[in-house]
Structure formats: structure tokens, C-alpha cells
Image 1 (cartoon, one colour):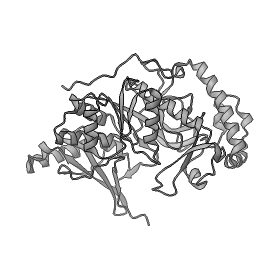
Image 2: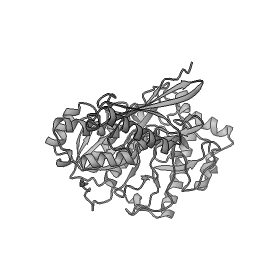
Image 3: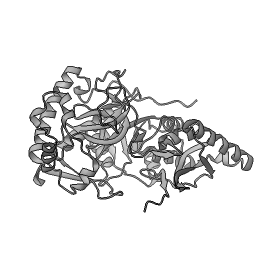
Image 4: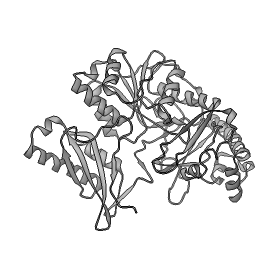
Length: 443
């Protein structure tokens, strides 16, 4: 049995707002909501026009429930107002611009005032603290730096925490492993798919990650499952923590797991969460699963009021054993816009990952290929076997393929062809993994 190195405890909380009473938190949220709504209405013509069409005025916000009177905003609204149409401050007050990759259209551009950057630094420091990191730690930041918000968000959060940050950025995996060893890094930030590659490459180089000081992994920027956590922890000896954020809201730092690893605490003093039914748009009570909607309470350069994230989750009903009173959301493993309908069955990529990683001798390296067959969407899964399993060849591989197909079938309820391929067949990613290959003709 591999021992998991546990994070240090007893750090001074970064913010007392993590422990406010319900009444204190709601009072703070309402005050900030009233201010940010007035700020957006007065400064952004888009909001003013949209809200007037919906017969809404900021003066109508007299309770937190009144937020439901405000129309939603979506990513298409950001693209339609590209590049600066949703900014609520003048450029002389903006110190930072970030943007999405724009792979599905125009990029979404987000802005930060100096105060916004400070809020971002604070929530990322709270993120690290909730995962057991503190000023004595050395945090190796392998998120990409640039227009992607991950790298700089983790960087400023590390510095705000008082930790030592290594801004190595993504890629150059052999150097990453060398730094983990030579610098004695105790925390690592990267995508979960990249960490699985680091584990694989370290083994090839003869490094045992379990012998290094590394004990905490901060993983975000892509969905991952509990089975992926178990794989990473088993093969590295660390504690693996999920974090959540999106550039439209602030970047990473919207929510984070704590040492209980039982859900992600939303930093509610800065981000107001709601769960809605994605079809009816009705607000759902805590405990029910639906689409996450977020409102920025402290971001002034371009406030997002009731932004539909498309991420599917629920707000947990019960308080966490860590003592924090800010609410938790459950792990986000799917989006309302990434669902596939295969032979009448709703399929999410995260379900396939979960099924694959339940099978011994299967690695976390896989791709889902979607294609049309007889006018309907269909899919196949390509997944790598471990080197030891592949060495068995023929009969052993056939048995492994059958086991893997059965696991997928019991999870999805439909039969899907699974191709178990040789090790190192599927391209590795040093950032977000490309899990879905869409071969459908969309013309």
C-alpha cells in the first residue's frame, strides 16, 4: 500500500470570510451585490439595455433572492461585445487583459483593475491554504503563462501566500521532474492530464515521485474524476486537490477543495453561486444538480452578473468538517454543452474516464472519437494499456479489451467499441488534454 503524504495543518487562515456565520455572509453578499449591480448598470451600455428590456433596475435589489430578477449573461454576449464592450472602467484603470484561445470563435476578453488583481491573488492564496500549503512551502507552477489565466493566477496566489514560487510554466517535462527533485518542491500546479504524464515520464527516467518532498498537487483547468485522483495519489504519494475557476469570472480561484476532499468551497464573499435547471432556467435549491451560475461581487473592470457557466454541479447542503462555512459545490465532471447523445443515451466524457480507470492495467491516456454512422452520432474509445499488460500480447490484450468494454457498458448502459492500444500511442499534453476527437461532418 502506498502511503499518502498528508499536508501540514495549523496554518493561520488567509481570510476570516471563510468562517463567517450565514447571516454575516448574506449581509456582506447583499451589500456587495447592490453595489456591483449599480456599477454595471451605470458603466456598461450592454447591461443597461438588456436590463431595461427585462424591466429590471438596480434599485430592485433589496434581498439576495432579488438577483433572480436579473437576466443571465452568456459567453456569446462576451464574444458579441468583443473586445472591450463589457468593460465597466476606463482603460487607464485597467492593468491587465487576458483572453481565451478563441478556438470556437472570437476570444473572450477579460480585464482587471489593480484591485481585481488583488482579489485574484487573495482567492488563490486561500485556495492554496485550503489545500494545506503555507509560507514554508515551495510551489512549482506548471500552468502556462500568457493569455491563459492559470499561470499568473497561481503565481500571484503563491506569492500572496508567502510561499516560494517556481514559475516554470508548462512543458519541458524532464526539467519539471529535475526541479521537483533538486528544488524540493512541495506543491505542484498543473492540469491533471499533465501530471499523469509527469508520473509516466518520471518512471521512465528512474525517479520515484514518492521519494521526493512533493506532497500536494493543485489540479484544474479540465474536468477530472475521483478515479483519476486515486490514480495520481497511488502513483505519486501526494494529495491531489481539485480547483475551479474560469477566465470570464476571474480565472482560477473561484472554488477549491480543502483537506477533507469532499467538495469545492466557493469563495462566496467574492462570487455568488446559483444552480439553475439549464432547460427551464429555474433556480434550484441546494442539493439539486444543475448548471452553475456565478455573479462577481468584487470584480470591477468587467463585472459578470449571473453568468451561465454551462458547468454541471450542485451546492452541497451540509457544512464541511474543515470548519469553513462558505458553501461547497460538488466536483464538476460535465458541462451542459458537452453532452453526447449516443443511440438515445446521454453520455458525458467524464463517465467514460471513470469507467476506464476502474480497469486494472488501463492507463489514464485515452481519446474519445465521435463520428456519424447511418445518420446518427456514434463513438469509439482509444485507450492505452500499461506496458506490463501490453507485454502479454494477443490473448491478454483481448481479455483486457473485453474487460474495458464491459466496464464502459455497465457505466453507460450502451455498448461502445474500445480499442486498447500500445503504450505511448496517444499524444501527450503539457496543458489541457484533447480528450474528444470530433469527426462528424458539421457542414
